[in-house]
Amino acid sequence: MLEYFSVKNYKNFENEISIDFSQVGGYKFNEDCLSNNILSKVLIYGKNATGKSNLGLALFDITKNLFSRPLNDDQNFTSFLNNNSDNAIATFCYIFLHNNNEIKYIYTKNKYQIIQTESLSINNDLVWKIDLSTDLTLSTPVEDIANKLGIINNDFNILIDNYRDQVSSDKQDLDGENRSFLAWLITNTSKSDDSILTYLRTFIRHMVLINHEAPKYIINRWFQRTLDHKKTAKELEESTGRTYSRIHVVGGGSNAGYLNELTAKATGKEVHAGPGEATAIGNITAQMLKAGEFKSIEEARTTIHESFGIKIYK
Image (cartoon, rainbow, N blue to C red; front, side):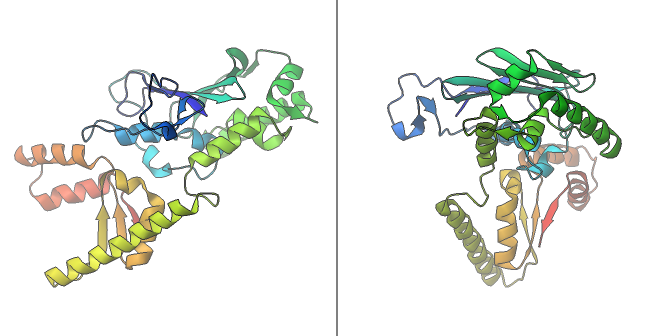
């Protein structure tokens, strides 16, 4: 279970913002929302352009560290750090609860792809800490690390040397994109059935909702929504007497890549997704039009389309 999450200096979050899923108080209204006395289902609400989508992106940033096809990949490439801060890194902290053990995973990045530091602690005991601008630091003997993480039949010293070689190669070949040490351990070690590494891999993989293991009712609901879009598009064309070749999706819905892909297939129309922060962009565009920064609404729309990486689904 995810017990705690915090992020700092990411997108619009200059100061640290956190969610403590263990703070359940005397909650009794719907106990289906609790699992092992931890909130397993929550609803985040607020005004437009206050950062709800960005908080979701921050929470799922960990998927980039472990998997080659993370959630909401395109949305994180732009404006990763907070523009108001002089701090050159964003900090992410996840605390998982597994078999009565608290697993704390902290990392920092200066760009979406590039990890600067990374650490793992179990019950507040540091297992390892890494600074990719310098070198890998091990807080305990390698044998203890292997035991704590449930690693078997591996020479840990050789693994560390191989990891250093891989990071050096990545810096040369991938323009600085760094490989997570956690991902390296998960991929390159033999593990016991109750290994913490196996647990983390499984949990984080399930954070990416739409995969081959997703519950059927979720997949079916997404398909149903695409049929709703097809019906709505047809009704709109019939009522206006016009034919439309594309559907524009803005706001948080533009982040749902799989749904947008299904919508394009169901309707037979191009889906232009983005920008995600449509409310804030629309607000400032209206002000710029009033101030004469744009000569026409067409010029403003063209500028927006060229500035925010609109993704097209066919």
